[in-house]
Length: 109
Image (cartoon, rainbow, N blue to C red; front, side, top):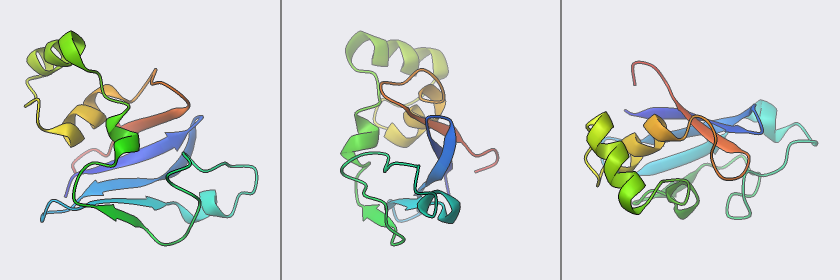
């Protein structure tokens, strides 16, 4: 099951996974939830213990992805199918994203 660690301003905030049946899941880390100084990663992901689930990549994470010529270049260089949004996310959003959220691939997932 592909898995990624989500960071908010460099602090581990939670885990994003893509299950075998294609369902995406984002769950906050308990330590992040319990830290009052740590904000929600977005207004669409309020801090809560219950995981968020979606049959498509959440629009918030999709919004971190490059579009147009940059997308085509990344996919060609990294040999990623342009429709594989999860792989694009973990391969291209580990640093320097718009806003304070980064996504890092979990090795071996």
